[in-house]
Image 1 (tube, rainbow, N blue to C red):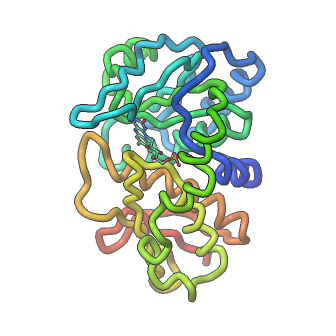
Image 2: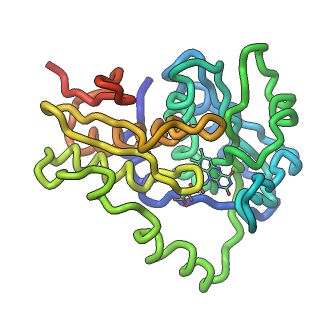
Image 3: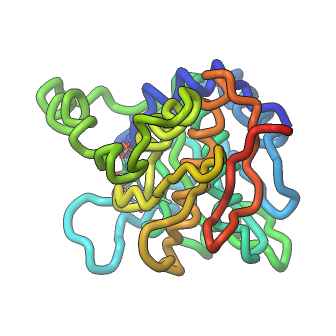
Length: 264
Ligand SMILES: Cc1cc2nc3c(=O)[nH]c(=O)nc-3n(C[C@H](O)[C@H](O)[C@H](O)COP(=O)(O)O)c2cc1C
């Protein structure tokens, strides 16, 4: 399975979650291109991404118990991605990794997206995807043309604020000043990955030339930190390869989630 490194590296730097769309169907050639990537970018057999060209508005329920405000309220999205997997020990991170491929491709094609892990109708989504008996919808995302927000809102929510809405690199990768250039590029790309509630649970360390990834604190079933970490793994991989690494993710050691090792 090929990761289009340059194309998705550019998408990493411009992606941001979008929740208000114009309600207009996305161009057919964009949908075809995105659908093709959903079908071909399938690194793990138990996980897949399905593009719904016509997404019923009532998939996005906009209610996360215990949260106030507009979190999770998605409006006017003509299409959607469904992130589907067979539950298993590695499924959450594999959903994150695989689904983010589709999100970055949608971004590269000029569409807006937003991972939605809580505020969607699971039964409705499952009914639209022709699920196998053991499959489950872990998360969804709208796909469409975002409403151009008023300039002031844009500045407030994004713009210069984006940097501040991320944890310092010293927290997610302590000691990185001494790391190889590709590893620094990797954690910088992981840092801007989307995560549920923007909690950024990923923590990186360099041990014996390998990069180890774990999540901060215990996992939270229902909205898995491992899924967030899977998203960050794809971001790391893209930037590390763009910076000359030839490594790959493998199983974690010493209780970590995953280990990045250079060949040989
Ligand atoms: C697994 C996952 C679940 C998410 N669930 C929701 C959600 O239910 N509602 C919502 O509005 N945003 C959701 N988000 C989007 C995050 O709030 C967003 O990624 C984070 O605040 C960082 O902002 P950014 O994506 O613009 O960089 C989710 C993101 C991830 C990765």
